[in-house]
Length: 69
Length: 250
Image (cartoon, rainbow over the protein chains, first blue to last red):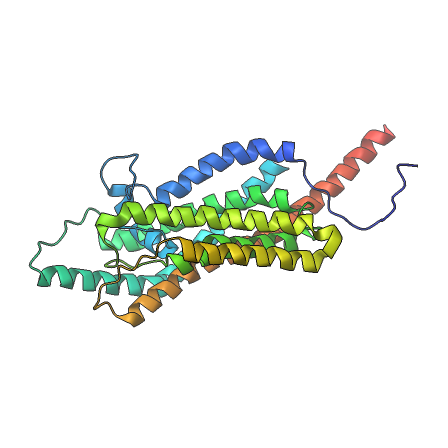
């Protein structure tokens, strides 16, 4: 009885959270780091000394709306 | 499934970055060049020595801009494709394309438009280097609070969906988010470091171009990722069915 579909609409099947979470955590961290390098490195905070990263992505940073200098 | 979506999201993100690069070259760079010329003229008038160029203007406006926007696109595309499966079939019962479109619209409003209304993008020559720390903190605080407001709005909308129906619950969510935006606008300090003599038209041109760059990225993500994800998920479903059939018949 429990197998009978009461409302046979085409409800999309959600991917289980347990399957998404490992990807979201590990890939998410790496991707956020990439965003940090484009958006904020050598502005208020520096992981690498100097300002070559900042100067290289300068125009992109301005045009994406990040605070630059 | 998630890994395949991530790969597709990052490829779509690269395409978004390429389109944004085209947009930025045509509509953004003239304003950046103009602002830099003003900045140099101002420092010359004060008798300051010109700043040494670590990276030439050609590289900044060419390869540097290209690298920045494509990296940004790929990273955001990846994050978008990781957020997508949380929404699909859970927050909406819509098709993958419609879910991706709505998610991109929500992302653009939450992470670009609302933060820009408080802390708008600034061209070179605007902004005191002394306050970069404070401005960066406030900008990222704005991003985080805006995102938190959106998450709260979605949670409230989902909570009241059975009682109010889809439309009214969604409207309630919008009201919650709007209240959060008003609160942030009033609570966070405003910053205005635009020099007295800076041309208003140039500022407007730069800021609209900047919003255009972001809109190009998010529109591409929403529309193209939706298309790619829908095709992939449909193929994966029929693939599963075929697999189940062949295993069952064995």
